[in-house]
Image (tube, rainbow, N blue to C red; front, side, top):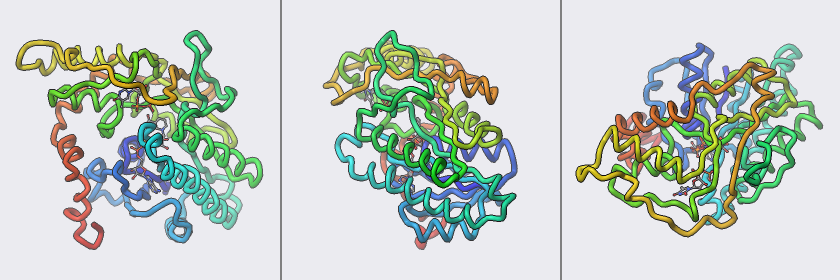
Length: 355
Ligand code: NAD
Ligand code: TYD
């Protein structure tokens, strides 16, 4: 079986659903259920014998030791993190605790467990650390996209904490030979994306008749990747990636925020026109810029394509259309996230003892 951390979040939930659709190898999901953890994302697996859930914190070493001893995973896929840049600016402490101390604790627990394995299992073990392109910092408009050799230059508390965890993961391979792989991925989007992030925020605010806030001039560029393509990339790395290696994962889909928001508004205009017939683009407002806002991220994903045959299957146009349709078909999901009702899910489904 495999152990996934942070599987109740956006990418982790998509990964578990994708994993169990692709194979029958069981998954245990360890998640603290912070505001970003939503077990409703995995409601379709409640009665699936291949799936197990444990509520817990990756900083809790005793819990990790117990979990590893009981379940004996052949791999750990580490997603759990605080992930929102704006929250990291307002309160960096939790980012250091989960992203740095948590990664350290998980690496140490994994090392102790891995050291105790018989040699064949030891050789086959893998710790996969999921990271971000934001560790590389900001790119000039004409600069070449980030390759794996690009120097680290994180600018936000979030990206600095992720960079720290990447360095720890790398060091645990070089010093202890723990079989670690790392992926640095660009901005994801798709189903179950928490509506504090740009794309789901724009879709849900547009439908609610609220302003669509553009930070600064809106000309910041991100390289967008449909979340399922990221999940497939991680599966490929687990299956055939080399320990000690980093793989950059990106969508080959650079777009400025203002152009992306325009694209979402045009799709909504066609699929769910406003009652007054005017475009949702009228709801766009420019607001104060994010402090230290990175201007551009872009990924050079040639290594994972060359070595593992991975390429994104969605274009930005096809992925955004799927995403907009998903939010239109799942407005009850958004409503429960926005009202906070999703946090009662454990109690309703498992009883008060787990709530
Ligand atoms: P998310 O915020 O949606 O989910 C994070 C999950 O981790 C939540 O379920 C939360 O409850 C859990 N968690 C947080 N602290 C924990 C702790 N101390 N112990 C156990 N569980 C904890 O994040 P996401 O967008 O799904 O990102 C997942 C991973 O992918 C992160 O490591 C992030 O840095 C990385 N990443 C994200 C993106 C993106 O665009 N979202 C891009 C590249 C890399
Ligand atoms: P976000 O989804 O927070 O991802 P990240 O900061 O990790 O790239 O933001 C994506 C881009 O959109 C980023 O340049 C900040 C910008 N943005 C806005 O312009 N308005 C918003 O309300 C939000 C949340 C983000």
